[in-house]
Image (cartoon, rainbow, N blue to C red; front, side):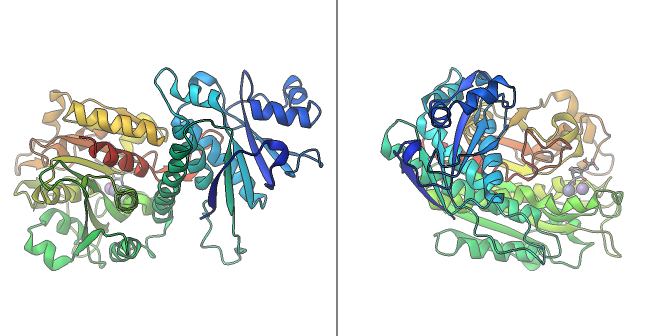
Length: 505
Ligand code: BES
Ligand code: MN
Ligand code: ZN
């Protein structure tokens, strides 16, 4: 992890290898203006020649040829001022961080300024600390090493120091924001590492082991329920999905008891399918390798718990991650089977590929048993949600407007995008079963919503939000110029901000 510092030295005195200055489409930032002056008007000339327009994530790297102490200057386009939000600010600086890391930069200085703060707020107030947190988090995301499995990978220390300059504001708050960025980016990068890990190196058991190792020294209490525990607890839903796999299933339960014992208790429940073949309702071969990230929701819960322990808000938060592979096999569960879930509700399996909702049923029941007063589940749940929202936003569905608002506000701060889909009563009939309490899969129509309708059966009257991250978990869009490609870590930072909001309840 690079060291993070606040700097007050002007551009002309920085001893960094590279400096980042920003520009909107309508003009250069003050620091970019200073750089322009030092370089004899080069940036203005580039703008006039339309070689640099300040478009979003545009990022020419210019050699300063001794006119500035830093050898390189990266001019980062932030796009249209009125379109700036935390998502775009994180992404822009992630791109910049990756570009400079690849060029071997070790010490970098990033300049932000009050106009960026004003643009980020867009009417609602953002603080200098919000910009500091987003900028530094973005740079640390950009410093992520994504090629760990290449045998000829050269040892690369990456970025070693990041200085942030140009923001005026309360220095204590700015320093605190840097500390938060370190934890938030650390958690995001852990989720990205887990999401990218091949399923042969990240089985349910290994996920539990790695999470437990991560928690060492944090004060978190972690419990890993093994098959015998799952059987004793009547988790027929999770056990049903796990039948086809030789890898044993687990349920990981983590607790941060930071609030009053009788206060609200937030439970984060994440889907931990370490590989999804579809089971007997087998998926087509093309693209199946991506199903290694089908534990992205569970990874976000586990890493969020680590970050929450580090930042230590006075809130009670529980993480619950049911984890298994979904495999075909001689003992695999089959269409037509009926599973008895921990809650007692029975599920007719009409499609073994709709396995995420089944294991979450037992995860939600476990969270309620542990006294959750608020439930948030997160899952790479449906291809339908990817069709609806692409890789840009996660689907948000809820039975409670207030908790929905809290999650949306946390996401806005975190730089995660969520978009609400409705749970109109007309969708309820989709999962009616003739033989059990409900079936697990309906037709193609409104597939993201009917999945949530299934989950809602297991939350009772507890306020609940469901996040379908099937699109944003991994950005594989063809045009990689507006969202960094690969695993994103979403919505781990949302969870951390949500836990902090719970401390205020
Ligand atoms: N993990 C998948 C969701 C998924 C599939 C995300 C493809 C992104 C791309 C999930 O377990 C699944 O297979 N869902 C099915 C549900 C259907 C059978 C009702 C889907 O979306 O096709
Ligand atoms: Mn599936
Ligand atoms: Zn799945």
